[in-house]
Image (cartoon, rainbow over all chains, first blue to last red; front, side, top):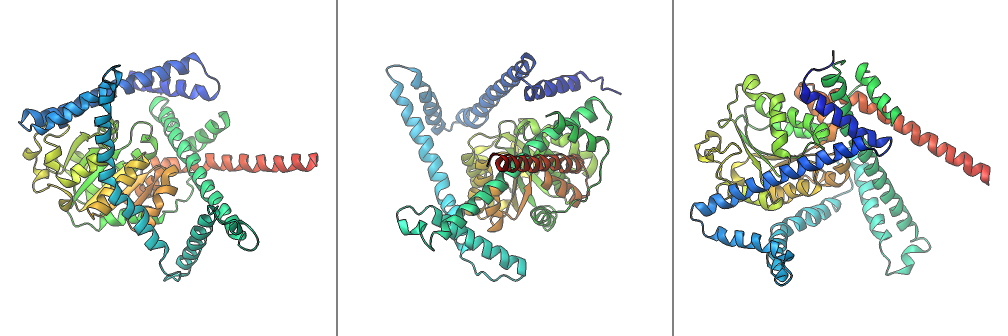
Length: 206
Length: 261
């Protein structure tokens, strides 16, 4: 029993239209693509206006004058389209970059360097055999992968020492392989969701 | 493409019932939520859109089932533009009022999309009321019982996020764990797992839900089977086909190379 809900039919049509690109670029795909872009752009505008209203204008209306500066910085972003005053857009950009770096840099150094290095430098012998094996692989992987990127000392890539960067290269390739495998799984995971939708919601055969 | 499609349709029509091996990362996510005392306050970021829904939607639904079942209070937000569109989809499946007797405003609240990425996270964890005055429906947050005594990071017993963005996943580790020292759990697409897993390995993430596989694990653990468990069979079957293609391609390459030499 095929669904009689028009919304399901529209969703099913757009799913099939998007899938058709896998066989060949065509007008039905372009149609679906343009609809998606239009809807996404419309949603972006609505959300943008809502954010300005809720997180900017609401505060200004309550008398928080500091938000006038925020609005001024926002307006200055658009001066980049003015031939004479385009340089003014650099101030809000500088503020955005400075703010972003200021908020994240301490935590980034802590999470990505301090904690990671401390964990890598932990004892090789763990409480169980698998843990010990993992620690040894991690240690060898880190040291050899880092050695692969040492280019200032030629001896690093020659003789006995040369085995370390070679092992490191294999470690990097293994990591890339795992990443690629996960990417394939993600893409399949995304598409199978639509296949299940077509079979269950639209055709109602599962 | 046709073969891939067929490889997905066959197990969908005739489920194979392949065994599901629950991973450590999903088990850790489940345990972290399970061990929280009833009534704990959880900050939850729905940071994915329609593209990520098939992979992350089922896991989010299973996660909410567990949180509502345990009687936790959930402060929801979205750092993804489409997160506010995913919220009603997810809630239509979870049905907290019908299934758990939960009440909007008393047991959970949704702030909607907040722009700014890490700036938004820092704002929410720093001082909620300095950033947010109303929820997604326009209610004053001070009029909602769930917000009583919830002002910032110290009031959250757990920070959770499920996202398609590496920046957002890392952002919650940076702000939640490193900056505010809160327990953090995360969910991400499988393709992001290799870059996010080091945060789990180092204890910065207490649990990690790895895409649709993690979602299936969570559905199994929470005893709320849904789309992810259905997907497991389909993914196992269709990816076996990919493995066969890779093997055939390599064998053909070596045979051709041998012939040429």
